[in-house]
Every structure is written in structure tokens, then in C-alpha cells.
Length: 101
Image 1: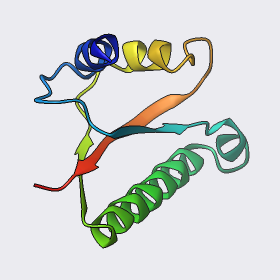
Image 2: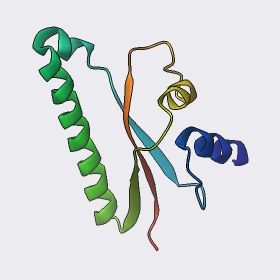
Image 3: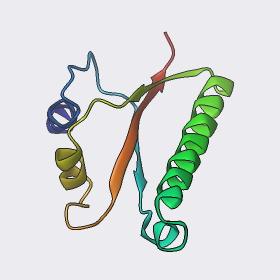
């Protein structure tokens, strides 16, 4: 578990006080939508990712759990951590989930 926390801290470029129960990354694979809709397709992908993040936040709230979005991370390190370093994926957002305070 310590290695996971250290890897997470390294990729996020932020110190975490403790390891979250769940850390979710929202990745975009927008090639298909950009083929059809060009630049607008990339915006569609971001809107869709935002919808899923909001759904996660709402569900956590209903379960009396806490969550915090993370946007300040190193893209290449996170992609490598997720095994996506050879893909065209873009990491849109991370979300740390855990017990409420």
C-alpha cells in the first residue's frame, strides 16, 4: 500500500494526507468523436467526462462519503501508471474518494 500511495503522490505532484479508498481517473479517448466533429468532438468528450464526474460526486454525497477532484497531476506519469502510455488517451481529471470527515 505504501508503494501505491507514493506512486499516487508522485503522479499527482501533491502531498496526500492519507491514501484515498478509491482514486478514479477520467480518461478521454476522443479519436472517434474528433474524426466526425473535429475540434467540437474534443469539447463533447470533456462535457461527457464532466457529466460522469458530477454523477460520481452526487453518488458519493448520497452515500455520505467524501470526494475531491484533482486536476494538478503529471499527465505522462498518470498515463504510465494506468498503462496508457502508448495510447492517444488524455487524462481529463482524477477524483479521490473516501470516508467523510
